[in-house]
Length: 190
Length: 245
Image (cartoon, rainbow over all chains, first blue to last red; front, side):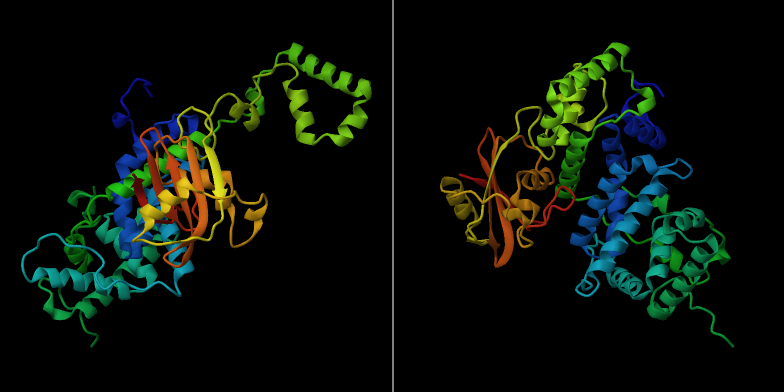
């Protein structure tokens, strides 16, 4: 890797290598590139902005310290996803007795009238799913990870991710009902 | 920023999701970029981590000239020959190790202690290459509050009172925030600004146990109220940064 190459042009993997070699700026570039995505992941996982802020900070500091554990077999983003998800789950499990779900979790941008309620319903419904299904849908459907990547993040088999996604989507479809345009009703068992 | 392209389903087959929920979830708007104050907070934490970071070279890469090895061995022999046995029994092991390792003016060792002595900034310090900030810790149990915070913090600065008794940080209700290192660790998560002095006071904030930290910079004073478990990893900020007049 060229030492004079601007950091913005260096690949994630090379940045991690530079960080492990002692480059004082490499991890800052990793943070700059991926902070928004990890913030979104923490927020969707915890559904609490204050908790998400603590978790994503813990995650980046953990990633900084444990950078030498990154083996390079998965993408850096996959590795970061895993650290953020684990930080969120650890915190949620610690705080479970006192954590309450917010009534409204995110401030929506301006949307067409009538669609705002749909988005709130979807997020509210997501919150009712079992943790495994909710995380699978967050990673695959909302963050665009492949099933393979999501399985690596969650530490489960690919088949498990697929089944959690399928069951989660079915459960959401039932919760949201026929009032949501474009959401096909799941087929009823005969 | 998560772009719509990043949310494309990996398998776009129409029968992959007969419920249509995947498309619905994929169409949800992003929460937006990470808030600026959080960016600043994490950036400061990363900077603090970098400041504490030392690169310990593996033993196989250390190169110690033979004359230094001989010199260290000779120094050890001198110490022992001069009745060093009795000295060693009264000298902390760390001090002895330091004498032996530094006797040859060895700068090639990768020990954390030697690296820190080469001028790395103290852990948790907000200063940039300058001397360690002066930290004073007090335990007034003053009841700080949101509405009066600025005035109360200014009063603390003007009249901090007697410093805490050494060892008081061992009390479970007090903790590391009552130590210099704990204060600096906490501040590393709150600010990147260089400061020369910190006045810390243990009390309550809006009725809950807290610590108030007032930092002195080149441009003035800034106050923070934090929970007592505040560290570089967990800012636990309750109030501030509040500039003091």
